[in-house]
Each structure stands twice: as C-alpha cells, then as structure tokens.
Length: 388
Image 1 (cartoon, rainbow, N blue to C red):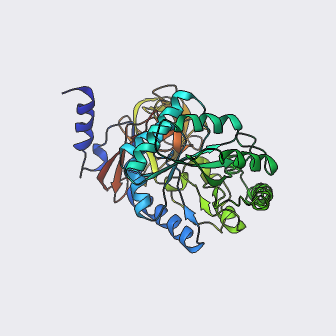
Image 2: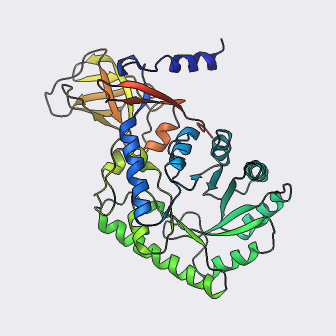
Image 3: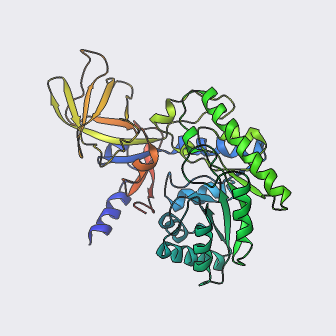
C-alpha cells in the first residue's frame, strides 16, 4: 500500500467513531453548524432575489461546492486555475476564476478547462482588467471551440486589481467585442479590504464609496449600449450592504460557511444573518512545563497570518491562550494569571484566525455530527485543491 492510499484508509476508518479517535493535528468541521450557515446564506439570497456564487477558495472541496449548488448557488468562484481544475475534476460545472490570469501556460489551461466544461454543458468565467489580459486570453481561446464569460474587474476601493471605474472599463468591454470566444458577462466589483473593517459604520462607508464607483461604471456602460447583465462581488463581511445597494445582483461570500476568529472580531451587522463557528483544529497537549503547556498544532497546521487562533474551551476545560511555538508547536498559557493548565494528552480545540489558508494546510476535513465532545464522525471531506 502506498503512502497516499494508507492516508485515505486512515481517514476512512474514522467513519462513525467519536471525536476522540481523530488523530492530531486535524481539521474538524461541526457538520450541523456548516449546514445551518449554508441554509442562512441561501435564504438571505432568495429573500433579496440575488444570485449566490460562493467562493470555493475557502473550502477547496468539490463535494462542498456541489452541496452549495444543490442548495441554490448558481456556481462557485475560485481564485486560481488550479482550484478550478480540481473542482471541475470533482464534477463542478459552473466556475468563475475571479482573478487575472496572464501567464500563457496558465491561459492554455484556462482554455482547456473552458472546453471541458462546455463538453459537460457547463461554463467557465474569468476576470480581466487590462488590454493585455484580454488579448492574451483571446489568443489562448483560439485553441478551443469553447467560449468563456469575461467580467471586467474594476477597482472599487481596495487598490489591488481592477481597472479604474468609468470610461476605462467601457474601453475594455469594447475591446472584448473583437473576439467571438470572449463573451462579455458583466462587472467584477469586489472590495476585499472592506471585509474586516471592524465596525459596521466603517464597512458601510467603504461599500458606499464602492457603490458610487459601480454606479458610475454601470451608467457609462449603459450609455455605450453595453449595460452589464451581472455585477458580482461582496464578501462575508459586507454582502448585506452590496445586496441592499440595488447595484450588485450576484454575491461571492466564502468564509460564512466556516467562519474564523478574525471575522468574529467584526462588529455584527444585524442586516446579515448570524453565522456560527464551524471550523476547528483538533490538537493535543504534548508537554507541560512551569507556566505553560505545548500542543502539537503549529504553523504547519494552522494559519497565523491574521494572528493566533483562539482556544475553544469545551465544558470543564481551562481557558487558555495560544502563541506560536514554531512549525509543529503551539504555546498554551492560562487566560488569567494563575489559572489551570491542561494535562499531557488532553485535547485542545483551536479556532483558526483565518479559515482559507488553514484549510489549505490539510488534506481533508473531518466532519462531526452531534458536537465536538460527544458526536461522531459523519464524513471525511477531501481538500481537492490543496496547494492549487
């Protein structure tokens, strides 16, 4: 048996077992919380008569993407060609690469993916923000009989990718008209920088400014008889604001499905549903010293780019804080001076500060029903696009 098949057998053997049987460090999902989060977002989109295209860069799983589409999503977003290929291989047929791709090698893969999805009666979309990006994409698509939906990305305030709103966006749409295989689909207007602004007022102001840019671009396009059919964007921190604007008609939130410690620091917007923490890293205490304990979850198993994880204390467990101890270790200290420490062998549950890159560190997510303490493993979900 090779290493890969042995790895799969180890995961498969967990089915039906208690969470105690899950070896550490491991990525664990509260299956009921995931389902409730998905239902709340689906109901929000339906109530506001707006399309939902959740971002799959969160979970990188074809199984979860298909579940989201079965629940009402029109498709999913990905951020890389590799993510799109992995999800397509798992049966996902409506994919939007919400990013600029300019490498000839990657664009050949884009063309191949477009052909694959066309053959399955699906479709592929991509974002562009430059003449060069359009020309390179058009050249690559000449190698296929498929067409690709193209969204013009505009900078709505983040200062990352995106052409300037207004006339520059109109010029790019006009340039699209020269290629039969590039279909003008609409505008990509995502403000990633607004998602973790802490107060509702800050987020409302950021999306208000973004809305002015979107409206100006929509109006300029309409005057040129190029009105966008779809304006897509919105994330977990702000999607309620985009929905309320009357401008966006498709939403792209991703993190809502699992949530994380950084989103928990945001002031809650009562116009949006409340989402539950559903993603945890199970770790084990491997050492206890004077004043601290050490668990086996370091930066190889939990992302630290948005700060340290929170320690999720189950009933009877001490309140702890986490600090990085390196690749394989986390340092645990009492949350209050003189507080108790866990014992060697105890389980410690961690809430990642940033869900997306944490998922990317794992081969699989172990879904548990009935709670982290007394539930049972209900499924093992592959992270199909890990490293993609």
